[in-house]
Length: 470
Ligand SMILES: [Zn+2]
Image 1: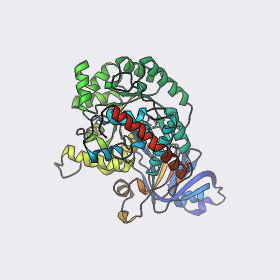
Image 2: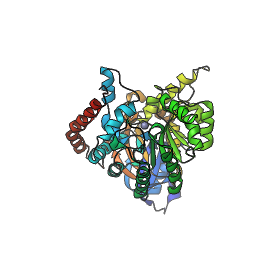
Image 3: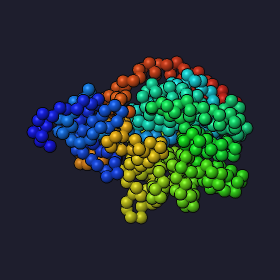
Image 4: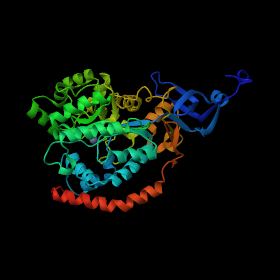
């Protein structure tokens, strides 16, 4: 556009202009604008175009020079455990010494979560959410853990978008008493949590059902009813282990998805992490139900051949998740997307000398289906005018990225979380050139170091009491 068109033109006052980067929108038309510009007003994207036009049209309170970066939507982690953040590296260290006891979540993660104080969870949240921001994740979905209000407080302080949730179990004598609730208490506390956070702009709460084997049918149906009454969803773990499928078959004579469907829980108000051990009919039933899913590619292939590609072919909104840093130790969703491509190639074989799924498709599922899983697809999932300004700038000039022929290829295959330079959530700059503007990182680390020894002492005492090797 020529400058003459803008004679007598008053530039519009806006909050932030991001100019000079290659804009990869991940919208339905896969729009890419080389040397592009994104204009932000308030918490929303006001305009997207070329930098030449944007620089003339707008007068911004803050200008971000995006040259050398790719500008794209923030990533969405659709399955995360705040309460396990400070377990990063622990299970891997145990593996170096001897075999661990399965299932890990019940034998290692639950005893850790039980010992956490509200303060521990607040600092776990600070550590987890800053770790996410630093690798380009701008929205998370907590699976359910202890002291969820502290998660919300930490998310608010970091400036990340997300859903918090309460760990919810009302069954199984092997679960520590302090971590189990009565059914009515579990329903009441879930309802109260959702209501406490419903007016918060950035952080909301969802309902949570830890898993089939640690719940009663009354709790499952009660949560399904609450989800519809409160207009929210239930976050759970589904088809994540052979022990769970065996349990459902023995107790109810159905596989977990069909059982959930028969009691009215498998519907558009259910979000299911893992969904690994799915038969063809499980997948068909899931597709019809409208439920959303999360593929945690770091851990899922250790259990079975996840049907990620088959789920995408059935238009199941399946996003990607890290499952927290307890296993793979990182919250980098770029890496999860890479693992998913490799995993799917192994699951499908390579009869046509091509991968079952492309890198771009995998990362797009993380962004677009992530937004659907978070029930925020009207406002997230692409860089589009009117959507929330949750935007990341990813460096694309490093040794292993040169030359950039097509920014979509570079961002899908050559970028990882640590290439992320600047992160904006809800129109606010949270990290700029890898410096946090919201949190004193040194102070946070110091506070965690002070608490860490005591947290681990409580944890190891619990493991010893359970005769769990560590
Ligand atoms: Zn999980």
